[in-house]
Image: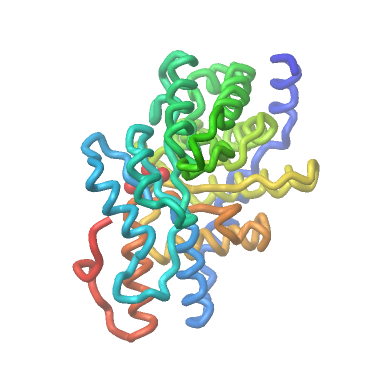
Length: 317
Ligand SMILES: O=C[C@H](O)COP(=O)(O)O
């Protein structure tokens, strides 16, 4: 595809009705759900969490503790499900792989010079390959927002294609790697807070899906605004329409600033009402969050016992 064709396609997409998208997201956010459905929603949300630590001060000890938490979120209640994945920087992948081996919990790693995306392409691909080689099952790449905003869509498209190729495993390490030599799924982060308009979010969604993204993700969590309901609505419409057109399903991951059970449930309602119930599984929908899990656990316990445990009851995220 040429740069001109790609540009014509992306600019030919219908514009997003900004007021309509915001009103619809706000309306869905007011839906209340019954107590029994709430218990199910909390457990579903736990299974969708990409439990994240992306700090310069991360240590192997902190990552191991987070993995233990993801495997057994509430040591006092074995009925609590596991999270979907632990999300870490590439140099922490081996530690997470070791801690999660055989559990089915994924190891997601940010790559391509996260969070800015500002590095030569070779460095970004090396970053990705290192994480995949260390056993990451999922790669969360950032797009080059500068190129996107300058209208250089082909550059962004080609970076996604190249990163997807780098996600394919290049060697099998005796089955030791969490990804079992099958390579990693690719999540493409837009940093929607920097894309300015909903039209840009829709264009980025179609661009990433056409380039081979397995998931599209709102934000790095490093800038504000991070995930919002209307932005996620636009992305959910895109994956719905893309499946109708191509038959291929793409997942969605809002990330950044999602901290409460109330917020998580709003996202689940939005998924159900926009993309549809097929997306209501951790295979197709994730919540990227560093501190949401504790609130889900507190609300879960409160529903089950009637007693509010308070944040000190659970280990820190
Ligand atoms: O991908 C997840 C985000 O980096 C976490 O953001 P958060 O700390 O606002 O939950």
